[in-house]
Length: 338
Image (spheres, rainbow, N blue to C red):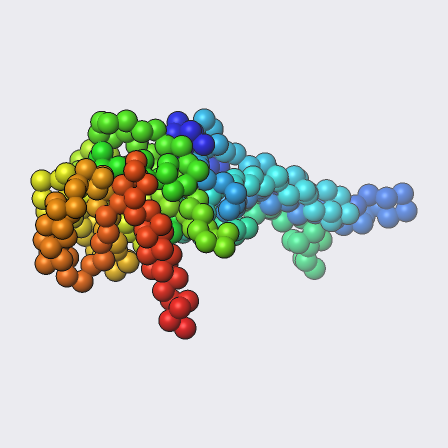
């Protein structure tokens, strides 16, 4: 999937179908001149339904169609026959989709299970036919109910990527390169900031044919929590990851400071993110000789007392097996504890 095809934010307008009107038919047969009312009810208007599909990764299919209108219910007929229901519209969305009311910004629901369906706009109820209004004092009612109007709603559909490991780091920290080396993903790689403008997903193959999903999130810059740069458009993807892999280059001026800034951005965006498992990877470590690595290790042991860290190099293929081992252990911690 190319970067241009990854769409994670769409606003759409939905209109459900109007209910059909009830019938005012009076029974007229050859030998029953005054058969009375036998008008049927109108059919309900079509619903607009969202359905979760685990095989979808993007909202690209919603990008060019922003208006959806369900079918109207059919009118009631004679012999108390009910009109046909309006055609429903089913809109498929990927797992991890969050639906908000655009006008109020209220979060309505999240789609997290395959096959899950939610009616986002209910079809209008069909009107009752005149058969319902017959009584001892009104034996031939010549009126029926009109159908009710459908619902009209503006919604914002956001996608939060469902991945096991989220790569967190400043632009140009080497996240895309790491993803391309440990998975079959082919992210755009270049030596300038914001190469990655959309999340890239890759499947990491582990021992015994086991796998886990890694997501390369666009680089964080200071002020992202306030919407600076790419802001919330990529920070929301980190919410879905169960483990956060902080990638900091070995040639950074101050590794601890970079980590603190990244952590602060996540905290300001959503404090619950700090509850996730964290691992620090010092990337581009092939630039270090053994002496420099030893000095840096002594420094990091003091600064990251309770946090696991390791040295890796995507280009030189160093430390990647250890990285996979550590991530797998963290992802399956709950299973091993049982």
